[in-house]
Image (cartoon, helix red, strand yellow):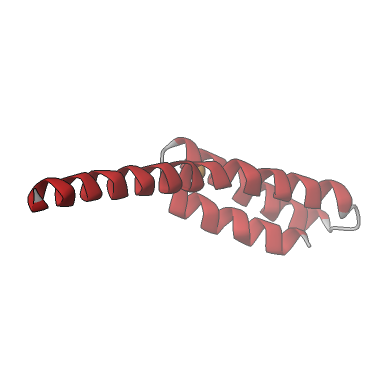
Length: 85
Ligand SMILES: [Cu+2]
């Protein structure tokens, strides 16, 4: 009885973690990409040099995201966003 409840709890906890973590991890990169795009579109006074840096980081971030390396992707996109401000 006790172990059954424990098993059910572990299964439910696992499912909740998977539900929350899955989309959050994979889903925030496209949002960050949109933020970078929006910042680039808004900040027209950005120097060509800086803009090139932002575009490079954004492209690398997108490639990392597609490769499943979301942590790397989010880091690069965050850097790109900072530069684009
Ligand atoms: Cu991602």
